[in-house]
Length: 220
Image: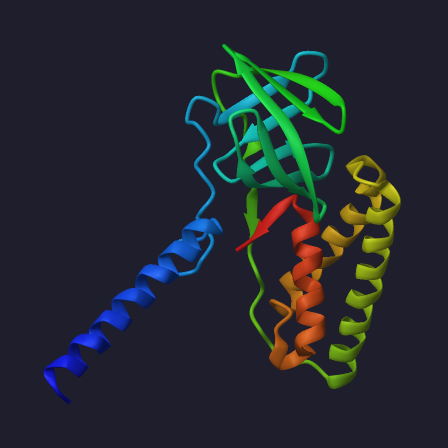
């Protein structure tokens, strides 16, 4: 290859890199084409907050908000943040919250309903998700594996029906989710995690969805 050809090849490479970076910046992506990480929540707002009008707690972490309740903790993921609004994922649905802080008072407006919370000096135990152990993996009769997969599928259908009927109101789904959570905890202690090798990809995926929806504990 001649010197001129090498120079042209280098220029094309440089031009391609510049074009890719320009497209990424214009579309809100990083130079390698991946979405930018969400901005961190201000340290001044992270911590535990209690409703000024009820005993309800709001536990704010860097990437999620926890609402401890009776038998279940509702978890809301934080997708994006701006100075006065957050995009969150609640029960699988994207929502916009209007969030503002004035001193030790945090105001959160969701779907036109506003709630105010007062900062707590310490984080109560309710804000800490507790892990429970997963039992050892053991061989099961094929009939039992199929029955477990069927049971998880049916529970997931009831779970999704309840969430859809609740239309974002977590209290309406508590009975179904708590029942599924307790079932999943008992099952995982007995047979180990619902893996693909024994139960298949569908049952394993359904178990993951149920575990996410249970939200009251973290599987360790």
